[in-house]
Length: 580
Ligand code: NAD
Image (cartoon, rainbow, N blue to C red):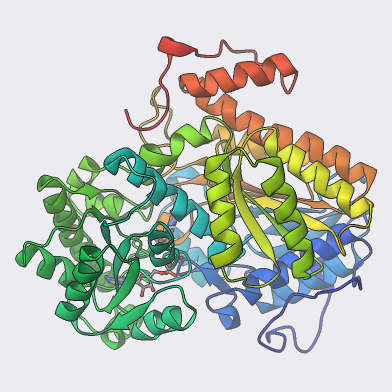
């Protein structure tokens, strides 16, 4: 029997539900089990914390939770009636059908914005999107895993902490100033991450309303339209060693022009505009927001061209800082690729944050793990925080993060925590929490998930897998194997993604969610899925020749976590991770 979800109809299908959308809290289920209720709450939650919920856009310019409102309503309707032996299929944010499967199978399988190689270009993507045939799920919007800025905050925090360690031989950024841009969904994590590390951040954000909203949300300390005042305040804060973040409302190109003109050299320079999307994500220089909006509608090709002209200027400015000896890195927004595709390839003279700072963590299966208290009860989160902090009390990196996260990170949406845990650690944490749910120590189940920017989960030659030792940067088999393996291990949701919008053709990745509802079957599915998810990550980097991954993999192999059929690189035969 095959049930099609396309037949469900309602006169309000084209309209959003009453806004703002808020994820259901409390013990009442609207579905047949916590597995589907948990996924429904995760869907509601990404819209609760979304940048533009009325358009279903969660973050990163165009990353959507569902293709359109009819699709959203049909997904909700399908989840509400889905038995625990069926699987809902979602294609680029549109529900297609419910198939009879089995109790250990995922309840939801998704494929979002996957295009055949030669057609995987922004032009094809937008043409298909215009026809309503595809949508981009970002990394965590489409599979309903986004938890607001906390997720990206920890990654940003880990990155800047590694910058401090690698370049300044310090545990934090005290007395250093960072210049960057973007105060959007993910980029707004930058000022907070830098000040949490005791540094000074000066951030250009072209959209005044966004900048002020981030100040109101306490993510940034202040915002001003006065360029020289912004620079002077940043310098003054650095001078007296005070942690401070200052948003300058304007185009980042003007900020760099002025800094270079005044010969003011920040310690660290990066960028987090949505440069991956030349049409919607990047504001060209010498143009107002209103002018850009009009041009976008009237002449999208010219808009893209002007945005790319500006990106070339932007990359040249960053190279000038590098030439003068400053720390410059790419923050994974495809700025260098856009400039290269527009005739200026030199941006690749500076590296990308993943290769430079995060790869040694990925080699150990350590990555952006997260969990969400589906009850909505902050006490449930506090319980899990205590449990994890106690378990890993001797881990300085985690301890420092937990101190910061618990005291300084405001909650958005359902209570959630992100913690970069490694192979074995994630399994242990999720199993203990599942047992706590079973024992009634929590008032509801916990959903475990992660960002797709994880060891096995992403191939992205300009972000995640740039400059791999064996040159396998563009091999996309790993995220596919990762998704397949997680599905057969019994995750509750598995998603296979490729880049959409300006990212079309640049990445392949997979996402996973698993609900700890306290049952014995959940424990088995958790054990299998978590072990496979991080185990494959280690093997991916071992296969590329990293000795740190080989050493972690050998221990896991000996413990019986998997049977490696490849020789694992050790010591001198491999490379430790990090930059070549
Ligand atoms: P967003 O679109 O919500 O925010 C980007 C911000 O940049 C917007 O507020 C926009 O007004 C501003 N902006 C655009 N052009 C500008 C210009 N010329 N000068 C000043 N401000 C400008 O996107 P986001 O969610 O913040 O993500 C930003 C980028 O970072 C995306 O490309 C995303 O894919 C990338 N990224 C981030 C990470 C990470 O870990 N942080 C990882 C991978 C990719």
